[in-house]
Length: 118
Image 1: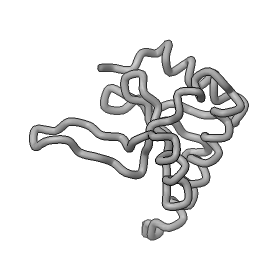
Image 2: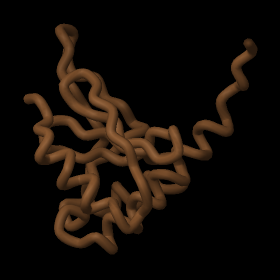
Image 3: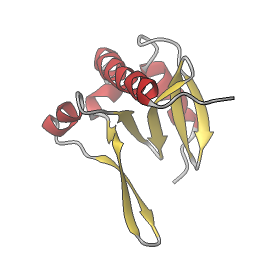
C-alpha cells in the first residue's frame, strides 16, 4: 500500500511542535527527517520511529512491535524502527515526546557510524 500525500501532510502537521521536518518518498512509503537525519518511516498509514537500546523498552512497554515487511523468503524485521503509539496521531504533545526520543536515537546512531572518507 502506497502512502498518500494527505497522510504525509497530516503526519508533518502532527510533528510541527517537534520542529521542522522534511519528507522523502522511498519504496512506496516515506522517510521523515530533521536536519538531514532520518528518525521515522511511514509505510502505508503506519508510522515507525527510530529506537535504540535506551528507548526500545518504551516501545515494548506499550505493546508495540518493530517494523516488519514481507519478502519472498518470509518476513524481514528491522529492529531499529518501531511502531509509534497510536495516541501520537491524536495528541501533538505525545507526538513531540516520541519524536524527540526517536531523533535522539537517530543522532546516537549517526554518531556511532564510522566517518566516510572522501
